[in-house]
Image 1 (cartoon, helix red, strand yellow):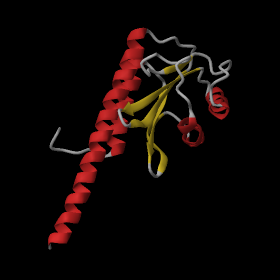
Image 2 (tube, rainbow, N blue to C red):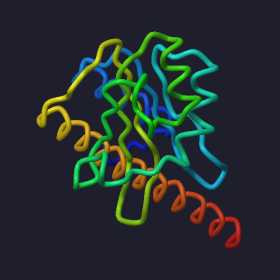
Image 3 (cartoon, rainbow, N blue to C red):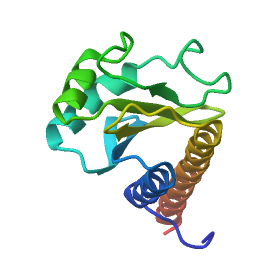
Length: 167
């Protein structure tokens, strides 16, 4: 795997698939935060309207320690109908789609947040400590993989530029 590079969408799709399969979520998305603005890296079972609202509201979302795991783990909004700190448009769209629980987790590395994983459940769901740790682990691995992909792409770009200068 080290000799082959993957696109951001391939990395995002694989990470989202793993998160959904291992946590029982019904739908989800990965929002990538980059210099070109937030982009949807992958999504499953969500309409375009929801993705547009997520792209607009999630980048400004604050992961405060009152509502997340102390180690930067996922924020679990067990009931989007009553949570005051849920982005309002995202809560409204979640309710329209009959999702009740929203889980939001940062995809981070030491240099900062590279993206956000969001997963939705139709019922009020309280995730176990093991599931929260699993989500954090998936996000950590995604962060490292995305960062490595960015570094490889930068290296390829610089190598191409160097080769062009030598010719």
